[in-house]
Amino acid sequence: MKLPKGTRSSVYFAQHPEKEPLPSRQEVKQTPVIMAKIKGPGPAKYLRPSCTGYIDHDISMFKAPAYTLHSRHSEKRMVCHSSPGPCYLLDPKITRFGMSSCPQVPMEERISNLRLNPTLASCQYYFEKIHPPGERRAPQYTFGYRRPYRVMDLNPAPNQYQMPLLLGPNTPVSRAAPCYSLASRDKNWFYKEDVAGGPGPTTYARPEPSIYQNRSPTYSMAKRFAYPLDLTPRPGPGSHEVQQVTVHKPHIPAFTMGIKHSLHLCPLVIDIRD
Image (cartoon, rainbow, N blue to C red; front, side, top):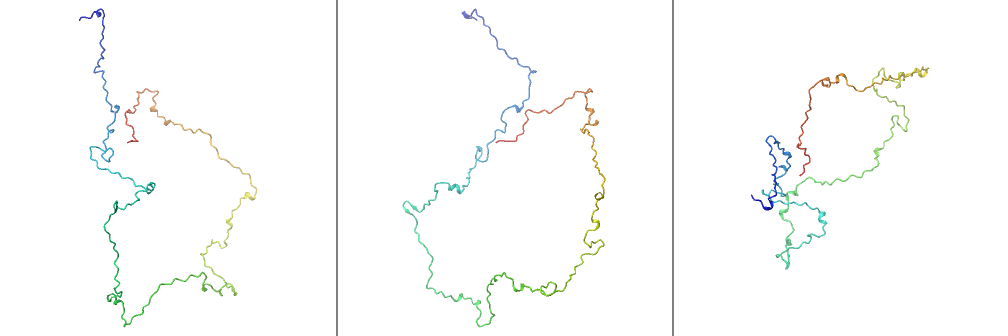
């Protein structure tokens, strides 16, 4: 290969790019794929359109016509409007050419014939209700309505006043002899019955001799107080578990196995937002 004239004395150095060595099968560490680490919406994120109603209805489904029922307005809301509303009733018979209607004839009631005789005919008399004039019949009387009672007088009648008695001890005018009354026997007699009606000698308590005699001195004895003791609860010899003490004895190594908590544990969902 011939080089140009100006470049015959120059030397070029080229270096190939370093290639990373491919890892062997022993160096490749295959880890299981955890779906919780993959950040993305779940299958419940994409919802199908609703098949009911008319808002966001599924276009692939048949949709029936929907009607909106408005709320009934109150009278107060209608009164608040300043416009008179449809209060002007236009007669539909009036046109721009005038009144348009069919011919009308007024019809009144039929006038009775004044030439008719008002006397009753023979068929309008009820002979079964009339007693034969030549026969005897029992007298008939008419009962009227009952008259109201006379207004009650508040003054007492003459029979309400009683004359004073002339017999017995309650005579205010004449002199009466002494009168005795015998009462009924209330109960049978008993030997312990209190006939006098007063308290007996045993009812009154006997006073203490120290009240009316010389009294010797008296002393009061208080209770015996307990010595101060330490009542702090202390464990007894049976409270210590000697078989679990391994400080001064050789024992095999012991390990505590806890619970393995997952980092991808589903939390408790309480508030669900639409």
